[in-house]
Each structure stands twice: as C-alpha cells, then as structure tokens.
Image 1: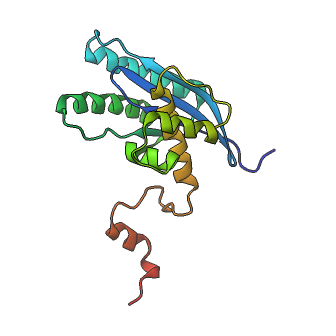
Image 2: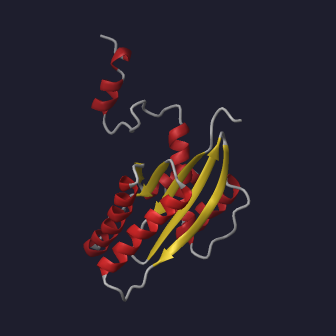
Image 3: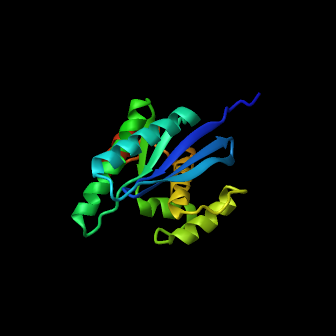
Length: 189
C-alpha cells in the first residue's frame, strides 16, 4: 500500500458553447489521465438552459470521478463585456457544482496555466497540448483543444500544490502585506 494515496484533480476550461474538462490522477509524482473531453452546448438554446447543463454535467463528473480538488481557468479580460459576462456565468455554475460537492476550488489565469505548462504565458493551444503530451504520457489528441486546456488547468494545479513556495494556508499570497503577515518571523528589525 502506498504511503501517499492517489489524488484526483478535476480541471475545467469554462465556456458557454464548449466547456473542456480533464480528470487527472496524481500518484506521487506520476500523472495519469483518467478522462478528458468537452461538453458541447447548443448555441441556439437559451443561456439558462446551457448553464443548467453545465452545472449538471460538472456535478455528474464529480460524482463519477470523486476528485479531491477542483481547478478552473479564470475568465480573461477582453473587450467584449457581454462575452465576459456569459463566460463568468458559466464559470460560476461550474464552481457552484464543486462547492456543492464540498470541493476546494482553485482558480488560475490563462497566462498562469500556459506559463506552468510551457514556460511561456503567451503559448498557443497547440504548444500547450504538445507539452502536455510529454507531461502526461499516453494521452490521445482530443477533438477539441478545450479538453486539453482543461487538462492543462489540472496539471497547473498539481504544480501549484507540490511547489515548495506554496503558502501554508492553502492560498497564494496576493500582496506584500500577506507575505509579511505570513512570514513575520523572517523580518529583521
């Protein structure tokens, strides 16, 4: 029996037409893909029906794979406010499903995800996918790169939780004030 039981991370790339998801199993330092796919939503359906389907699908994925943590890509700031609002709603219902299941929720910016996987925060979807094939061996090329983007979110979260720089409180420092507060013993007067 392993001293460190396998952990499962659910990664989500939110979308209002195509939502990607990737389920990653972590056993020590070995990463294995359990499942990666997309939920394709009918753009002709009303937005509320699509949001309900996102919530139901994320809930079903959580029920089936029993992840320990939930990682989601944060919406990026674009010029089209309506698109951002719709994407934020899609992200919100996915997060609500995770919270309802009692999961810890972690958010990562698209730039952070790309940086974690490729070392370049401006990498394109193909570059991210090519690197993921090296990180998680044996994964087949998905029909939609939204699925591999979701897997990238899960791998980014894995890198974050195993980082020696991780803040002990379970959240990252967002400011110098947080850093100073968390490291008061290191301050020289």
